[in-house]
Amino acid sequence: MTHRVLLVGGSPEPSSGDTLRRAAKDCSAVIAIDRGLDALLAAGIRCDLFCGDADSVSPAGAGLVRAAENAVEPDASQAPVDVAGERLAHRFDVVRYDPHKDDTDLGLALAEVARRWPDANLRCICMSGGAPDHALAVLGRLAAYSGCVEVWEDSFVQRILKAGDCWELACHRDERFTFIPLSVEAVVSERGMRWNLDHKRVALLSDLGVSNVIDSDGAAIMCHEGVIAVWAFKGYFAGA
Image (cartoon, rainbow, N blue to C red; front, top):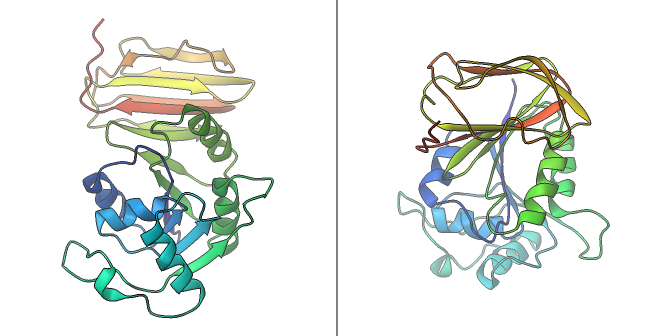
């Protein structure tokens, strides 16, 4: 059985609770990356694993982390509740990192996913808002992950595609669409777009694929070589 694991990052501008709950719905494990625990608590979602150095999580979240580390029950009267009214004061696994580490919390969390769920597909959220430097670094780390990667945010959905991958874009008609190569070169084909490509060789970080428009329910993008990041922007019609 292939697991789908939700990684909740510590974006300064987290996704909405509704998007978080939809993202978590069919995942077999939910991982909070430092301040991502606060986003989970605010959305009323239980955490299975906390990964981080606890340098950005709120005092309330840090208290839950300490309780989990010490294998004691946290104070339920102070805990938030989930959408069913159940208190979220529960123990979860904790992997705490030295704040003077030579890697990001995301990089270390990905290593933990690989250790616990070697064949897991990733769904990521709260990864890109308000911190463009972190967002770019996130792309680099996710591009290196061996399994399937998708990113959910309030205004877009995103995939990381590698050689041989194809994203069928049913239900995204009239949305703005962008791809960016993350490898030195990528070979890309598109169909059902305002502007289509056929085995086009595209250089690293080229803007050729920016702001296309999905014109068909049968649209798709194929990565024949290299690695690309791909976005469909919800409810946004770019025009000609």
